[in-house]
Amino acid sequence: MMQASGPSREPGRHGYFITLEGGEGGGKSTQARILSNRLAGLGYDTLLTREPGGSPGAERLRDVLLSGAVAPLGPAAEAIVFSAARIDHLDKTIRPALAQGAVVICDRFADSTRAYQGALGNLDPRLILTLEAVTVGPTRPDLTLVLDLPADEGLDRANRRRTDGPVDRFEAENLAFHQGLRQTFLDIAAAEPDRCMVIDARRSPEDVSEAIWAIVEPRLKSALQPARGLPSNVIPLASSRRTPEVS
Ligand code: T5A
Image (cartoon, rainbow, N blue to C red; front, side):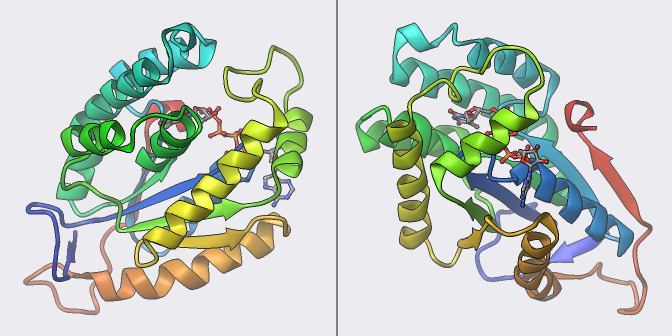
């Protein structure tokens, strides 16, 4: 098990929490997988998960949310349902893994609620802050990777990947919505530069993953110390887990 160090750690958190954020088709899932595999190969205990979803209860809410069934109730209701899913995901999946010392890699998290429902839904920022306080509490990401590319390129990628089936609730929004999303994620990153790093996602998957690695590697090295009692040259047993839905 690895043990975390640092000035303001959540009590009981021994692992490291990384989230990937950005608009549609930016390559978050691709890069989350690459990073998880790379870390597992180096002996880190890793957990790859996603939102909405990542626990059985949250996955059921994912289906409801992405079907568009909640959309007619408005962005406040959607934000509340995304938050309900997040509570289950945090309680059942993320916090236990962090307590065990894992590196948790999560494909989307609370910044997506800030962007999609908060900024693009024109919600009062106080509602989003209150929801975050109730749902996320102290379990804030240590590092957020914002994959940035022009909205039309991201939508093109998402469309090319889809072989059949309808677009989901958010892919169906117009280009102006997606351009607004891109700017919102950039604004979030600018407001929290210690947590958020913006990555140019227009490059090849290999180049993007190297840019991510250059950010992640030094941070992990300084954040995770070998568990007390183990000599510093002992590498923990490699273990890579995924919530079933992202396997
Ligand atoms: N949402 C989510 C909210 O509204 N509020 C919230 O609080 C939360 C948590 C989730 C939806 O829910 C919304 C946001 C979303 O709309 P989802 O199906 O999980 O839905 O959708 P996304 O998270 O947007 O995932 P996507 O699959 O659309 O995009 P990714 O993960 O960014 O991209 P990825 O890796 O799947 O790649 C897409 C395609 O591009 C290719 C891939 O091979 C794939 O075909 N690709 C590249 N092509 C060229 N160059 C690269 N560098 C590439 N990287 C990947």
